[in-house]
Image (cartoon, rainbow, N blue to C red; front, side, top):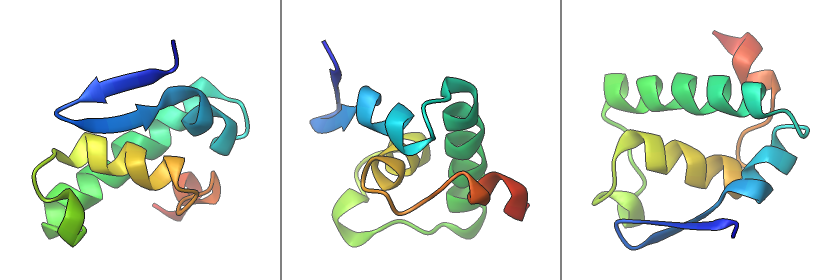
Length: 74
């Protein structure tokens, strides 16, 4: 089962891992770094305001908005 229901938002964890070049460790690093950035800047897309920073980060990774280069950015 690859879909995880989190507060009504569908996160496909397998797609997230694929977008992190198949590396779960990189996925965790990417999601954590992006979630911290979202919390620090209070940035959230308009349609994702009701979910937390971690879920928003995973949704961005799932959509392909972030790549593994994001880890090296910080």
